Length: 265
Image (cartoon, rainbow, N blue to C red; front, side, top):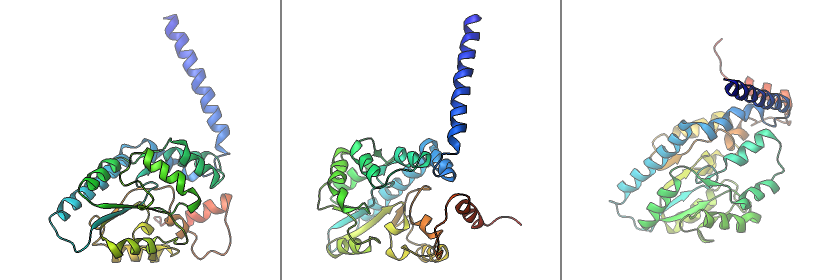
């Protein structure tokens, strides 16, 4: 009985201490409104289910495509971050404290701590076995080409070489790189977590314009375009500030974001 009481007291003290630390750290959170998004990405079974679902749909599309004939070699274009590579720890750190970008991101790439998005590795090995060319089209900066190449090699991704890794260069929208792949290949699928991974027209557009583009492509989602969930970052966040002529920070930024919500009157 005494032992159980002692264990209970120790557990309470540990919890109280940890909770106090969290309360003190709350004011230091860099992206307080992103905390729930980071928790959802790291802890929810729903996030993992959506990832598996995306690659299951992609697998089914390839199975159907194998029955067709194409005039050029077949290929699949995939993004890297949050599409193939799971950066949850790095993303969560950015919520807790402001990180020095790109220095700390490059350190994260080189650390070897990143893992694969659920379902990504199996799907990529499947299409590699079926003879599809895989092009990793990423908007990572050119100066991290070597560590990115080493990362995808270490993650045991197929076709991990300089020919199939297409870094940003001056092509922010990715459209030029996709078009280049399409010159010599029939692109069967595009897979990403950001609408810019599918069409360059999304780049630097407003919320409504991006929605209109998405609606105009409604027949492509789940067929030619496979999108994965990412509530933490992407061009959707830039669209929130479309048309603003000043930088917002702190409470002003938070209140502005809240003003964009449609709510019940």
